Length: 73
Image 1 (tube, rainbow, N blue to C red):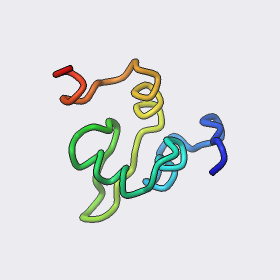
Image 2: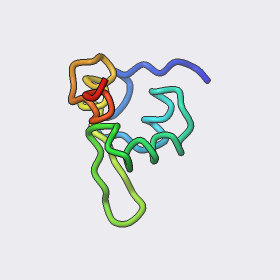
Image 3: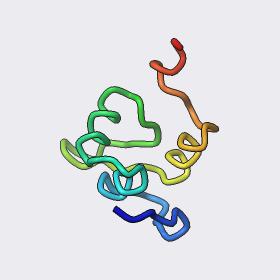
């Protein structure tokens, strides 16, 4: 897995792009979204999820919304 340049990504990310950016499996992205741990995601229909690149990058840098699990620690 190679590192992803966030500047090269579009403003709206697919699950696969988020997984590559975070260097995790796509199933991890789906589960994190389902549990409310990963911000910036919006469901389009039953199966499609798209993420705001800005929201994911802010969260990754520690400047975005924190998950309920992080608040309890």
